Length: 345
Image (tube, rainbow, N blue to C red; front, side, top):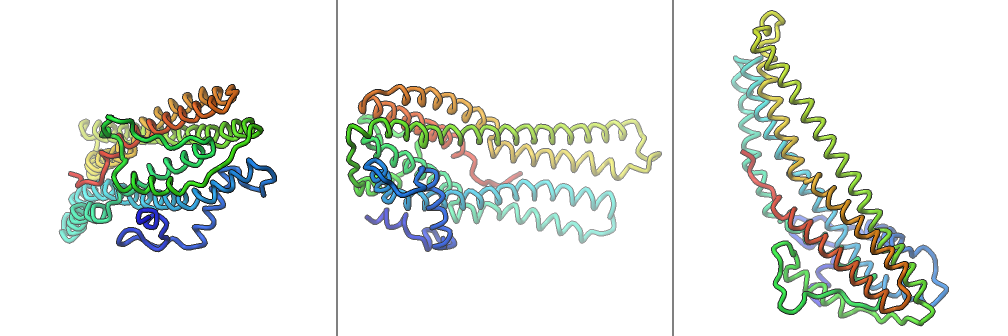
């Protein structure tokens, strides 16, 4: 059970990783139980089955989810800082030339920014932020589905015989082994015929419905940021165009704006390039499209779940939900795996 023990360690998993406190872990466990709809003591057999499976799965899911969020934050802060330092390096040199021609020492700030850019990828590569983020996130989503699949009485879908791993499949060896070990300890959840209706309603609301809500929120968030970046780029372009027109018309000296026009003409496009770089790295437009498509699929699957009239039908719909979510995770991984932190030129 080495991989399970590794996942469950709350002190550290990787060098340089801060410990997860017991308080933070316990608080997130309660949040996750709320996501599973486990807010009161069960008074029936189906409720006890949910509690039994949640007690098995929730600690692993919470650990993977907390790690994914933490490493994602570190990765995004570092990558955003890289784009910011690239724009700042351009702004420093043009400001020095335009307003402080005799202060050559200011150029050392540009040198420091360039050195920071050169060394920026090193901590990300050493701590494997990008790889760990997408691996932990993929694992967390697999574990989330595993809870509901176990409740339905169907297992996590393994790769079909003869099917090779796709380039977009992040099921690296340690994740697969961790999943295998966790699933080997899955408790048995007995289901009586009377549990069919509660099971169908529970899966439709707390699995499919919650995923629909997540993708709806993610679509709104990504679409909002996509439009914000577009508006920012448009504003910066207009500012640059106005500066270029004034400079070309020779109005800079008469308006006492010549140095400022030079700064705007050079620095503002650099800032626009940094904003574009952040948008490209975050893939807001593509993620918004993906979430909208996934929301439509889940809506259809929720209808199918509501119309299921037997346990085999419920299990078949659950398997289709898992397959759809797995494909969505692979698509996300296929996009994000190429967005590691690199030197910005």
